Image (tube, rainbow, N blue to C red):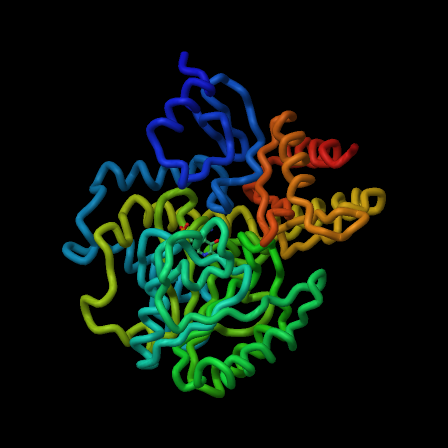
Length: 422
Ligand code: PMP
């Protein structure tokens, strides 16, 4: 039997260090919220492939849908020989996204690609170049997406120069003393100091910052962005790659705010583990690029599209939005309880089941990434995989499958409590 440590040695020799890998064990198989490594050890998966598995590992309905498609065809290149499932999926998403009036959807493969294409579409629609994004935001690792990403190390280090005309303003944070008004004022200031609003194509925002630390955008910020975009003819892009598909207790996080973006990017849990991303948006904006301007060899891959149809069915039939809200509430309750006796828990943040806790040194208030690493290690020793995030790596995020059985969820919460105890 190959061991984890043998594979670790081979991995370090065969693949570059730039692809950072969190776990030192290797996956053998997985089922719903459980995964097993090649040595037979069992883990509760609270990483869910970085927010991809809202419907769990190998949901039987996803497996059946992929198998059915596998028996018919796996690739024609949609732009060469199209197929019905893409049209139907676009129709379903058009009806589901929180944008009124005619909507169209284009499919791609990765989250970064969705962001790249959203910018292309906004530029084609407005005839402008500028993009405003937020500090701490994450939009992907391709060069334009990286330009919009608001965190230097490790993502941008050594990779510049980046495309021009991308600007960052602070994201609201109670802990850092930044209000929604401060963020909006920073944009108005940008219009004075850096770029004429008439040259701005798009403002891009994650309604809950993912990699940046699960910072929840206040409704006032999103309303303010909508006002600014309307005043200057700017396209508002909601990056729902991490927030989408029931994670926050609604299908899309923007639905919590009653603010309509012009474009929505989605990926990750859209296809439950198959590579698929999309940009949905107002038809007039989506139709700006000329024929042939959008696409990709694998864009709208038939296996991934089949899986996405099953994801939408499972979310509706298993009421995963309601379940996300209920599970999130339970977890937040437990974290707040731990916080009462542990001052290192500086803030518990949540929208539905997008839950995080920020750790700071109780004495100095400094971000404490080492405490996060300690909690992660203790949880992992008990078989619970936890992810970190945040500008300073001092936030633990919880991204369990929404389909996790109750008893297993309860067991995981007990491990979390134990990991926080001294
Ligand atoms: N946007 C957001 C909000 C994300 O969280 C991510 C991935 N973490 C991306 C874009 C990029 O997605 P991908 O890794 O599929 O390119």
